[in-house]
Length: 241
Image (tube, rainbow, N blue to C red; front, top):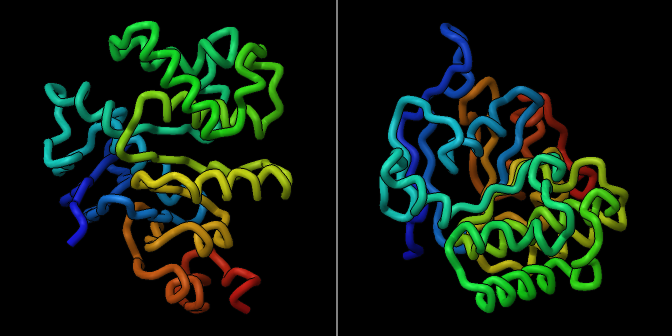
């Protein structure tokens, strides 16, 4: 049986008193699994992802790699979980691509040689080696998204968490990113509106709506259920119609 790497029990969270953004979230994620999280705008997808890295702290229990998510364990958990934000501008803040990708390993205390090896490997993984000395803000949006992924990969996480990785990408760049993600063997959690990508990449999918998990299962089964999808503001992907 696959190893459990994330366990969430009875997670509740509110940004403001009386308005719950997440309600009674119970979820387990397993090693090497690719989990899709779908749902309408405002469903709580990004809020849930931010809990996995300890950036938000709701009521309930979360375990990452068998350790409770707590202030004492944050350093350990952030080494295990790599979070890629929807907007790469939130992730890229150093002058060059190389410096952005090297920032994490340096903060982990790695020496020069080990950092350079991590950066080389991460840039190769996202096919950005030729851009390593470029100014990060001069990259295209697709290149910025790949650079943000590289910045996370360079810290060697066991769990890769991505928030809307395909948003605002043209079809060719979207295809490139899907192929890139399919090659990563780590556990992946992807929040997205791209249901075709979920069909292609994910082993399991959950539907989140108004902060609650309202459906979960194999992508083809869930995404073929017209009444379930339409009741939560979604449509059956064209490839299944």
